[in-house]
Structure formats: structure tokens, C-alpha cells
Figure 1 (cartoon, chains in turn yellow, red):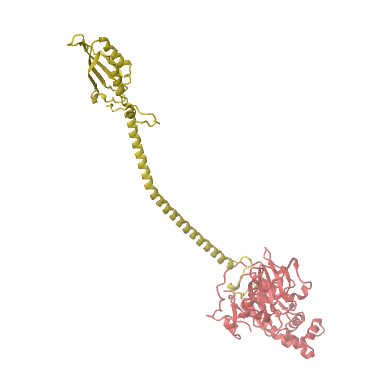
Figure 2 (tube, each protein chain N blue to C red; figure 1 turned 60 degrees about the vertical axis):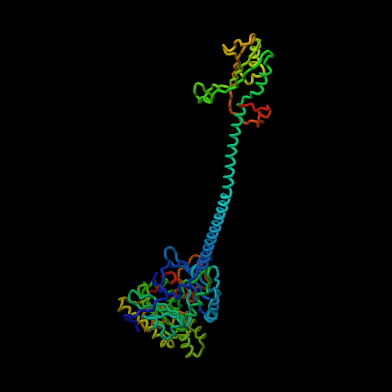
Length: 232
Length: 349
């Protein structure tokens, strides 16, 4: 094609687009929408941040408030555990008591009419003998020795001594004593003719501090029921 | 008078703002503003094929307010009062403005080109200097008119204005884009008769090398015939169209200076570029162009032919054209020239 002379008097700023979507109009609108969205997003972010901060502060306050309660609860739980341990120990102590009052009353009632008791001695072995052996040792399962009842008296009938030994072994004192015997050489004649001096030694039941059952029923103190005060 | 080399050290005024490189549109509707036809504004839609050939898609008169007085009476901030028929809704529009002070001149400075106008009221633009040192083209029109013409087409709807040109240059471009100039080898002289002016355009190797505008036109020619015959201009026009009279004795004194100017221009091209111009074309009203060509042939012995640049312009198959397009095709010269020019890059510094 031949060369044409195109001298255009239309200014650049007078050019228009034929598209219904006009960048000249849409660009500022999109920019405004984008700015609005950015501002909205920033506002939401700030609001969300403030809410989170407020929630955190409230949670920290609640934690501070609850921490004293928790500490109090923990101290109560610890005290309860300590009291329960103490109660358990007391229960075991009560379980381990050997009550001699009824046994001694039964012994007194078993003394024949022709006999009389001159001396009654109830003794425990020394403390070192009552220490339980360490677990796993040869004597671990062996119960510690119990108390020893030593009776000295006078009788006119030798048979009465045997009856008294039998009464201690098999009568009402069996809960407190597991065995009774006249030590060899202890039955001898008295200075009064027809009378004899005797001695009976009874071994008391061993004390047992076995642990109480897991849900032990609270038990009233046995001493009150037994009208005791004779326990060691 | 043949043009001379441009003076050293003086450059034409640059266009307002630096022209951006843009891909020229391939589908343009050209519309002539201020043509003054009762049928409407002449409009031609051109489309460039992938091979680069221009073809007419549609041509016709569009019913829009296009007279200069009405356009100047519109508010300056109007928003696209024009709505074109669907056939003319190309993506881009090129507007050719026909107005007494919408002109083009070949000058090395805007000041010289607009010396007889108040330059402060004009919008001007100059083309780049040609490769062969030809003078730049300075187009100008009143700023108020240009501002309103730029707003005639609405935004957001096809077409939108991509170019505002002056009609005299658009008519020359119509000839430059026509097959007539290509058939002449790109070197020819065009004498274009307008209502009050006549333009001489000398083409060398397909480009306009020389442009002159003379203040003798159709009205003067008709008056020159009507006066001695004691008839009015309309009657003289009818007589000339019918070929019933030989107007040579009346038109000769009026026309010969024009052709003498054309001959001088060919001598200038011969000296400057070594090109021999043998083809002379006369375009204009059917009542005058054949008589002007005959006078030129008789007086100079050279060949001069009438031509109508638009009539033999290639058309697309199924193009929407008025029924009497061949008869009125000359009216679309400015529109088709503006559209064709808008399909190439702006010629500006």
C-alpha cells in the first residue's frame, strides 16, 4: 500500500475505550474496593487480636484465681491422705492390740478353791525382741513374740494346777494366750505340809499389725466396748 | 511555486505529548464531519485483511447531527450523542472534519502554516519530516471544534474515536490508498476539486511529496460558466453534466494556473528525485472533472484522466453499500481516506 499521511489531531487524553468495562472507571473502583477490603481485613485482624488478648487476660485471671483454689484443694488432698494414713496406722494398731482383761478374768474364775495365786506377772519381751525382721530375710514371716504371763501360787491339790493350765489353754483365755505350761522344776512342796508351790507360764498371742482391708469399715474403738484400759 | 528545502535550525512544532507506539486498528469506520449532505454524514467502514489489503465493508450516510454549527452549539462536556447503525460499529472510528478553518498545509513550522489564523484558538499537529526532505504536513482546526468532535462518539460502545483528521488531507489519503495510484506506479499528480478549494498533491513513489491548496473550487468554476451564460450555478452545473456546452473558454483562465502549478511541481520532483511524472488525475464533481481534464490535455498535450478514488476501491463480499454507490462514491472520499490513514501509524514526531 502507498504511504498515507496520518496527522492525528485527537489528543491522547481524549481517547476512549469501547469496552463496557472502562479501566478509567473500574481501576479506581477496584482500587477503592481493594483498599476497603484491606482496611476491613486489618480491622478484623485488630478486633480478633484484641478479642484474643482479652480472652487470654481473662484466662490468665481465671488461672490466677483457680491456682489458689487448686493449691487449697491439693493441700486438702494431701492432708486427707495424711489423715487416712494416720487412720490406717491407728486401725492397724487397734487390730494389733491383744486385750488381756477378759483373759485375766477368765483365769481368775478358773482358779480352784483349794488354790491361791501369790503372784501374777504379765510382761513383754524387750523392745529389741519385738522388732520385725526385714522383708526377705529368713525370719520375715515369723511373728514377733507376744506377752508372757507368769503365775505363782499355792495349792493343796496338784490336780488343780493341771486344771488351771488346761483352763488357760482351752478356757476363756485362749484369745490372749496360745500356750500354757508348768516349767520343769517349778512345782515343789511348800514349807507347810500338804501344800505345794507351783508356777505356770503362758505365752501370749503375738501382736499382728497386718494392713487393714482396702475399704475398711470405720470401726468404733474396741477399748470402749471392752471397758478396757488394760491394754499395754 | 515549487517548494524549497526547509530552513535550517527551525523545526515544526511537535504534537502535544509524545506519540505512543500503538498497533493500528484493522477495522475502522471513517466518518466525515461537516460534509453538509442532507442524507447524513458519509461513513465508510474499512477492514484490513490478514494479507494487508483494505476492503470496504460498509458505506452509507449515517443519520447523525454532523454540521459544524450544531456541533459547536453542543455543550463542551457532552457525552457521545452519536449512535451509529450496526453495520458501522467498527471498534475504531476516524473522523474527517470539513470546516473552513480545518486545513492542512505543508510548512516547516506551525507558525508559518497558521500565520493567517489566531494560533491560540487552534489545535495543531505536524507530521514528521519526510525521508527525502519534503516539508512536514501541519494540520489544524479550532480547538473548540476538535474538543467537541472528540466527544461525538460515546465511551463504552463501538466505535470510539481513534483519529481526528482534516478532510482535505483525508481526500488525498483516499487517492493514495486507492488502486488508481498503485496502478500508476505510485508517482502521479492529483488535482482534487472541492467546493471552494482545489488541492494539488504530487505523489512520488507512493508517498505525498508535495501538497498545495488553491482557493479556486467548484463554486468558482460554476460561477465562471454561469456568469457569461447568464444562468445560475445550478443550471450551469446541469449544463456541464449534460455536456451540452463547451466550457473551455470560460474555465480556461481559471483552471490553467492550477495546472501550471501542477507542472511546476512535476519539474521540482524531476530535479529533486529524478522522477518523471506523467500521470495526471483530476478528481471532483462529475460536472467539472472531465472538463478540467480536457482543458489540461488541450493546453499541455499531456494525458490527464478523471478518477474517483472510492469507486474502484475493493469491496468485501456482501458489503453494505447504498444502491447508487457508484454515482455518489465521490462523497465518501474524506471518510474512506480518514479510515485508511487511521489504519497505519500516526505520522508525527
